[in-house]
Every structure is written in structure tokens, then in C-alpha cells.
Length: 195
Image 1 (tube, rainbow, N blue to C red):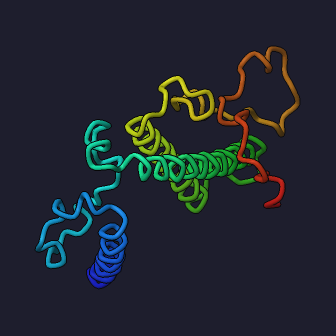
Image 2: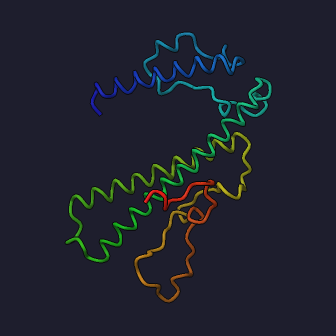
Image 3: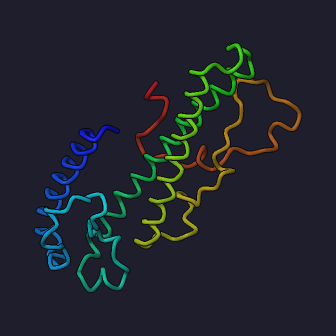
């Protein structure tokens, strides 16, 4: 990222945070005294604490009268977790297609562009895995049961996808796809609609 791009991104983030602070001061009045006075002057805006309800332990949320706001944040984070899983599934599908092309021999070896695409796809997969895990941790802070039946703990084994382009082999069905392929999706959301 160029220095000018970084400055522009930082300035945009600062504007968004200041906009959030105005909303926050009107809806979460109990945290007003926790916002630093010189916050608008800081250069390291990416390190500012946004003081979401999830930033506080459960007891403090009750004392600060943030329980209803915590419920709203919980529902937003749930949607965010589902979005992260959707994006993870897309990344895994893309990796499966690349793997199939390599196995089928449709490319002569792994060309530089193919390697670059594969590296980027693996990085994208890692990004969405980390994003989901981070969101799940926040949901846990907001009171989600660790044994939640929908938004489960994500392991590396859950990110496995069977090769659907190849015929079934003996014992091919022994390894079951991860739970991310079988969870109940949000109502009205279907991947087939995108195609």
C-alpha cells in the first residue's frame, strides 16, 4: 500500500469512527466519559477502542445499561459470522476447482499465474477462517453458548470439501464434509440464487 493510500484509508477510518462516536453518544450515554478527549487528534485510529457492548464484561454491561445494545450487537455478529462462513465456502470451492484442474492436467504444470491464484485463494481462506473465529469469540463474550449447534467451533478439518467432480471411489464416503457445508443457512439465503 502506498503512503498516500494509507493516509487516505486512515482518514476515511477516522471519519467513520467520529460518525460512530456521535451515534454512540446518543445511544450509549453511559460510555461517554470513557471516550478520550483527544481522540480526534490521534493518528493511530486503527488502535482506538470502539467501546462496543462486547468490549465490556457481562457485569459491566449490566451496570452500564448496555444489555439491550449487547443483544443488538449479538444479532449483528451472528449475521457477520454467517457471512464469514459464506465467504469461506466460496474460497474453498475455488480451491477445489483449482485442485481439480491441476489433477485433470488442464494446465501444463503450475504456471506462475496459477500459483499466484492458488496462493491468494489460500490466503483468502485463512482470512475468512480467522474472521469467523474472531467473530465467534466476540459472540462468546456476548453470551453465546460454547456448544452452540449452529455456529460451532471451526477446526481445520471442518474446512475440508470432497472432490465432487471425481467419481466415487471405494470408501470415498468415509470422510464426512465439515459442518460448514451442512449448517442451516439463514432463511431466504441460498447459494444457487447467486449462480
